[in-house]
Length: 564
Image (tube, rainbow, N blue to C red; front, top):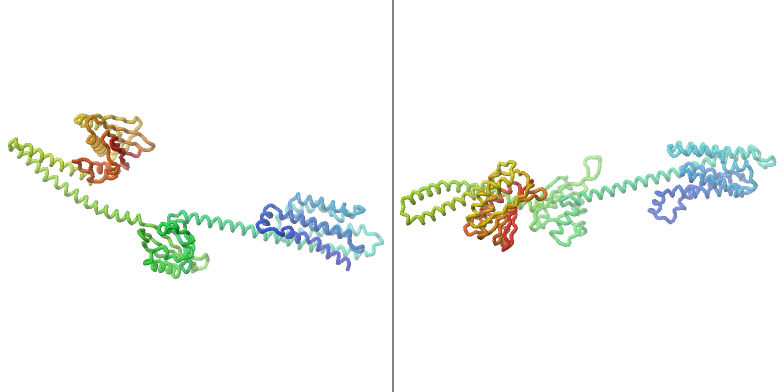
């Protein structure tokens, strides 16, 4: 009976190693405990608990009653540490196990030293530890049982050999007691191993769950960033039509209509808040169709001066079975105000283009009778007295002026695709220079050419570019008085070529800069207002741009930019 009590108590002491581990984590928060686990403190806790268990087992073996069997099961927690912890921790506890013997065993005895420390089987345990971590659970259990059985069997044999003849127990009783210790050690070691494996499994599940949670948070954040980056207003609603989520674009759209609006002001309210009251029922109907019937619907709504295209899409729960359950709906709202304005302007442009084509046809037909009238006026002038020449000259000049207006109008109206070829801008300017010098000499003006040497060839229609240069140059000459200087300059700026036509005239008032390129707007007394419009049309057909820089009493510069 005494031996049975000793065995049971030793089993409890030997198995207490792993059950003491939670005591080392009392008072720690879950985050702190997880941090310690990541830092490897679980092995340290197992080692500390094993030290306590080894010490208690050894003290019990030496300081129990005189009738007790002095066999220590401290080898059980030591074996667990060697198999499950890092090698340096196993070495430290192996040394401590030996030191404990020399601290409490008096007098020293070789049989007792080998019995209590189990040092003979240390090499086998260390060799098994190298592959133990890679075994399956069943194979780990078999290895653990085999090692503990071998250790306790050797200890029992040594103890039997060390018995004295005057012992109160018979050999059979000692054998039965040794078998009891062996079975008890196997039970203590097996239960401890199962507890450690369960802790490892639980920690693995927690780590996997933590990784899944972090991936979920990362994917959710990524999805939110994608939804916020999309240039569409997006909101999700539940089955009751209550807003659950809005992206940044939706929040900004709502703030544009209702200043000081924030996300909390939108979430938890009906989705009909995004439209005017008159159209709220239509949006609610679309949401119900998506939730109840799984239908996708579209709606064009107005909110103030803005026009929005709304699309309602059902949202389904994740399920491998069909039909899937609808959990809500998603609203995708796009601001199409500018698109509607562009569509309206395009309709106007189409109508204006039709009117322009009709006007061009009419003006083309008008030129023929005007040519006939001019011809008969010249015949009448030849047969009339010279006293009437002054009147004929006025009529002919007005006819020529009307014909010039018609030519400019036709050039502006015929927005045809020009045939282009590789041309040198300087060659076009040189071809026009005699004509420009002739006009300048008649007005008492001069011309300066500042042509850059590195201007490359451009894809141009030479005839149209001549018309642009000639028109801009003559406008500059007409704006200057005598002794004015007209400057034609070319330069390369980044990936563009610039042509600058600069005069020293009185300049153009700032309020008129924006209207210069409008048809029929002119600052000249007898101008038609079509010259700059024609220049702009030609430059745009060359994928270029034309701008004006002018200050009063400082002159004017027209800058034509071509892409290289």
